[in-house]
Image 1 (cartoon, rainbow, N blue to C red):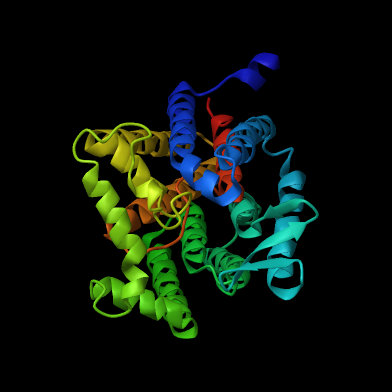
Image 2: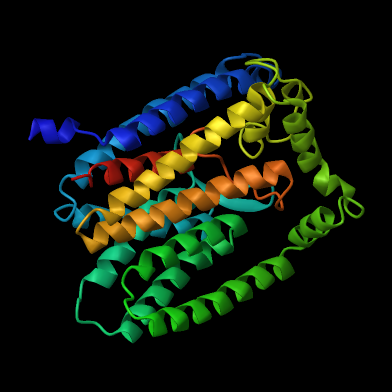
Length: 367
């Protein structure tokens, strides 16, 4: 029993460990000056990241690993956690408990704790959808499509109106990927995709229409800053930081962009600082680590005989690869700035804890 609790999939654990320490090292370098000018203590933000993201993150990893060893027996816990965070989603937008920052209510404050329910609910939403779709093996494809769409709709609505458009899209794609495992005939996959594409496009255009700042951001991006010049400032500074890193990088702690400072460099633009200090070579190494980790998630899932575990792995794979791509592409200027955090590197403990927990669960799936 004890050996089962401490056994790890080495091909998942090693890249995760390297990414975790690399993220800690990069945040240390990135945060010192910014922390000094904001708090008077150059280590304040680093200590916060160390405790909330790194140490607590690994605790969540081991928690996920332990719960995953009794995956089916812990269904009740997963359902309860889902209900709690789903309730918090509505409390964020409907009650004074919601904390508003920059015209968005995405956080909830309970005493000393401030967190984002929309981030913490991700693994539990995937799990509950998996359990719902697998609960009746004889259910028709139409019934599965109906259950999937209703569930996805219920999750997305409160997150969409926070507003958190990119996060809604990430969860939307993750839950779709999760449900695909349960459709065996191509005709139903085609119908499902057709409905999903129409719903997705509706929400995209509705989000752009309801919030003018998104229209400004998109216009600024596609016109290269010819209109709404201020909306492209962060993107331009990110690109300058990345390009100035060159092939080998300037070296750890030698970024110049962080002294300007680069807007939102501890979360939305953290990849830019990394690329400036570690260069093209370091960036390729980082992408390779992410790629290896994500592919390992898929392999663990599809090597497992349990359809529920395969579905969960596919959902988490879609979530992480989408979130990572959005962050890096927006920093490179290949995509509209999104505001999503980079796994293991950015501040934003809610997102990082959900990722560590999910990877702990997947680690327990190994044969």
